[in-house]
Length: 503
Image (cartoon, rainbow, N blue to C red; front, side):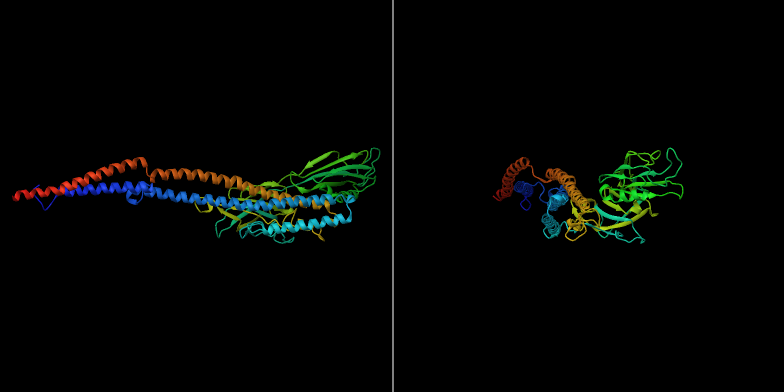
């Protein structure tokens, strides 16, 4: 080397030393952070992929937290419902106990009524006070809102033919609504048994004009119970109808008469169930003097007939029908509807009705992607004494002192049915909440946890440092830095050899 202005060997040694220092620094960074990628220049494509996976991991973690929070909220609501269910069981016990009239004193009945009033107040308090933080859960705050539904419209108005609407779940975008259209394909029917009175005797053509020819005993059985009725010879169809209808609350069977054309003597008594559908039935058995020939008694013997469920579609889906109620469990909406009798049994010429679900419900975002697909909306209806019961008129509030079904009214059969309907309402709601916890929240949490594990593993494979590899790289870099430093020293000293030429 005889040139001193430019030391090429030194430049090379500097470049190599810089590269080795960079490799050493990189190894130290990776070992100190545990990450292979600490900045974009380490691996641009890997950084993009790992940041995307990190975003997915964060979204999944939040979704898991949301699902756990939802599970806690539902558990609080279910706890309140459990206590209400216990109170309703106590309520039925008091009614059943008081129905044993001869076994209780007036003071005991009064004490039982005081307990009933206290139970009703407790149910209302639980309905109002069961809350998660400041969010009340059982007062209807999380029920769905609807438009175009008026279950109290008077006869003759533009009826929508809905006696009750319960939205269990629905997915509705903000500011939007869900149209629900109900079509009646075939009507639901009562159970119906017809019996003929009158006819001719075995020895005469005398017309008996719709009366019993002999003393007759019949048994009538319906969904509420059975009754034995005895009628004397000469009893008319109208008398039979009156006797049967006087026991309708006990049997669930009602009667009507067709007296026939004047002079023909043909009369028909129809026994029908008070309810509709395949669960309704009527059984009429003539236990004495059956037949309408020689004895001219009721012309039926040991007949049991059931009603039929109609066919209804809700938004084009075949509904699950039980008499005058229909349910649908589609993927984006779940609801239970009650029909007016005119709509359900086909009396009304209107065969279609509709309304809108405009929002509401308890909305839980339990998916990594925020949107309608990841939203679960659960309807939690009000469980106050004004809402629980057999119908909008027969609710458990009517069991309070001075009201239609208090203990003083002695309407024990009706009161028991009201309470049992309320028990079923609460049990159904608890079942839906439990199903939501078990089949939606728990499964969602489990699946998200598995997805999180896999995504974190993929992100780790891209971004995390392999300590075995980086330790080896660090040792190599340290050696090379030392070697290149020594080389640079030698390269810098080579130019001094030129001084020897100056003598």
